[in-house]
Length: 268
Image 1 (cartoon, rainbow, N blue to C red):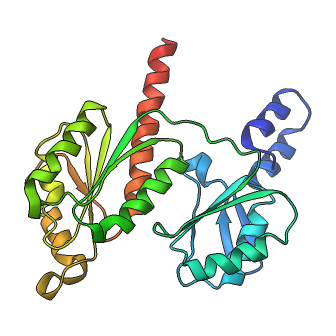
Image 2: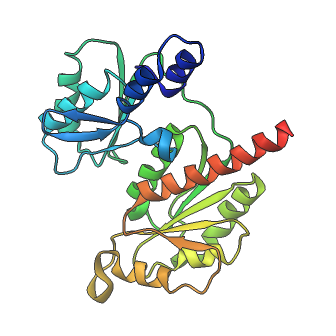
C-alpha cells in the first residue's frame, strides 16, 4: 500500500499532481468492505494507534472478509476478543489467500495478530508495568500485555499480588520502580482496592482496570469500578470494567508523547 509519506514524497518530487495526491490521501481513509464494515485505514496516522477488529459477536466469515481486504493494503491486523473456535476457522480461511503471513493467537488474551512476513515492529521507548490482584484478572492483563508488546514497548508483569496477602505487592512493585517503569496498569476485581494502594506508593501514572469478578451487591466488577472511581489516591485514572485493551492504548499514547519530546530534546 502507498503510505502517506510516499504520497507526499511523490508530490514533492513532481511525480504526481496536487489533485492526484489529494485523491490518493483520501483513499487512505476508509475501506468499505462488502457492506460488512467500514475500516478506518487512516486511524494510525490520525490517532497514533491502528484500528483493531473487535471479534466478539462477529461472524467468522465477516472477520475473514475484513482481514483479507485489509491485508491487501496494510502489513498487519489485530483482532481482539476472539475465541479459539473462531480463530481456528479463520486461520484455515486465511491460509487460502495470496501472500505469506504470520498468524499468531494468544488464547488467554483472546487476540489474533496477522502480519506480512516483512513487517518490522518499531521499538517504542519506555516501559509499562502490569499488576493483577488475583489470578482471575490475568486474562485482562494478558490482553493489555499483548497489545503493548505489539506496539513495540517493554512490559513487566506481576500477577496475583492483591491485598488479601498485602505483603505480596511490595517485592514486584519495588522491582518495577527499580527498572523505572513509566506507567502502571493495575487490574483488580472484588472491592478493587489495589490500584489505589499502588497509586499511593508511586510517582507515575496508574491506570486502574476493574475486573468483572465479585458477587452480591458489587457483582460483575461494579464494586471494583465504584471503589476506583471514588479513590482519594492522586495519580489514578480508571477505564471501564474489563477494558485491558483501553488501558494498553492509553499507555502507548503516553509513551509516544514521551518519545516525541525526548526526540525533540535530542535534536535541540
